[in-house]
Length: 300
Ligand code: SF4
Image 1 (tube, rainbow, N blue to C red):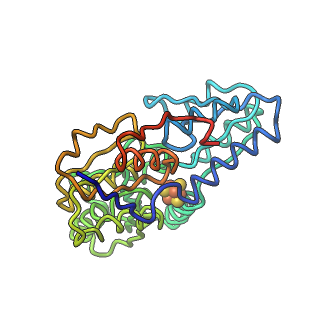
Image 2 (image 1 turned 135 degrees about the horizontal axis):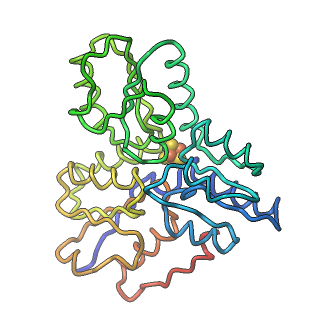
């Protein structure tokens, strides 16, 4: 049965990811002989990490360690801070170690950090909705005991008497944030709310919600499982009652038998997913004889 593949717009790299990858490439040109280390994954995609290795840019990652702890493993050369941002303490420590620092933090992440700092200085307690141990969240909740991480409604602190400022990680689900904001407003009617979901995340999620009248049989979400915004796209697809939601990192994880009976397949990808990988999946879904090998050098 012939399949119609509907490419959802927008999808793929956001401005912050594009900028981070560009900065890494320029860093190699500027420091051709230096050891270059990325402190964590530059963006959450394993293929991008492999592509950077072709430029001899190494990534150190350990989900059990904070960025500050990871920095103990970097002693020379250039260190690149990832698109997710780092705390001021990480920057200070890298400087004290004499490392050349390149900050590829996304401007929207820096904006959230700035707002949180301002509100802490004004005496607010911060309710920060985010994911535990995610580097973007960690850079914020590690800065002060007055930042309370909220992952679900049950985490909302009780008995806070100081003024409350509520904000969030940039890549959360627009549906989850609304639910948690509403719950906080019940307990803290005077709280100040500042939704920091970035535009790239918002429009990619909204584009899935907008599919509802298009009789879609299946949704493919392309991206790395470590990418928060990618996982949220899949979650929103499931919450939108699309019968079949398939998450895949690349064409290697696409099994055509999963799509038996599906004639209209929508496809989207996370903000850190190379378009090249998505296009390979589209080509394969349209024509099963067209399964291409992944060429990492195409990502640079
Ligand atoms: S998803 Fe949003 S916050 Fe993250 S890098 Fe892209 S634009 Fe920046």
